[in-house]
Length: 397
Ligand code: ADP
Image 1 (spheres, rainbow, N blue to C red):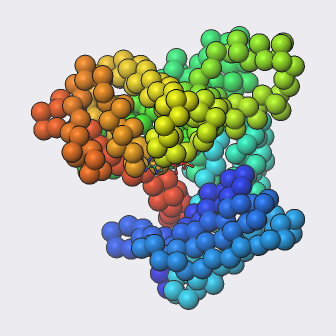
Image 2 (cartoon, rainbow, N blue to C red; image 1 turned 180 degrees about the horizontal axis):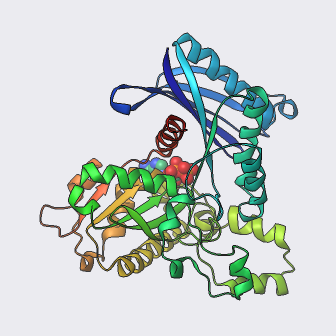
């Protein structure tokens, strides 16, 4: 039997899963991936092979019965059935966990003590952490002896210097862990490794990665290590996102509390779900729809999105002391030539020169030959990164 690793990425309304099989030279090959989305409304299960062929799909209408736990059980049973048919042995399950707090600066094998510590971090990521932990508990209940590994979005940023992590807050708050952790770390780690083959010279130097998806952030890498990133204590800070504000003057929060009688729940809902591209455009959080729209508000939302990326890019390059390569990744970064072009326009002073034709073709290299800074489109793969971490940890314990 060949070994395999399953990866689970649990969210509030969806659970994504995938399976990788061991291959020669310590590689992992993708076998299938799928997801259940619409949890709480009309859950829909879809599974596809590595080359995108549909393997299975199912929709449930009786929603109260199909909660996170029953749907996770369906996923895990589906994986077992299909894995066995392919003669694959399951070595372990890797999970994406958004917050590792101060305790976890690298992936960890899960046990009851670890789970308790992860649960204690729920107040730091209330919308994500509970849904990352729930599938771990379900799997532990179904298969108590199966190895599970938690991989953290925060871990990659532990190399940020201390002054980059601190808010200028009273020390008591810093002591209890109120500081900038940073997120999207699994994506940045994957890109940092890809850069070693894509552009080995730049990988040894100063690289800025723009992860532009429905969640968006930017990271500055020095010799492959995270030095600065735009997300902080929570995944709200930094760039404008699909429905999240990005950086916001804290005075706005005070104003809303004092004059609009908004409480914590109302603020959370507004900051995470009703702001960003959706809030400004009043049309959609989907960049494709905004780019196609003739509406002035859609154009303005895109303008704010680009302005904040450019501002963050300038700040990140200042921290790194220069720039050798710029990388675009995630849903918008990988797929929108228009957004990449708008981002680079006016930033030529950094030494970047976009090759519009290569950009329209989708790269991977989208800078001109005479550009002092290379520009790349590199698809991210957080799930493969989790599978690699899981295999590595289980091989060495
Ligand atoms: P998530 O943060 O949910 O993982 P993704 O990285 O999958 O997000 O990015 C999803 C977003 O990517 C969508 O909301 C959509 O706005 C954007 N997107 C996908 N394809 C395109 C495209 N061709 N042009 C512009 N935006 C796109």
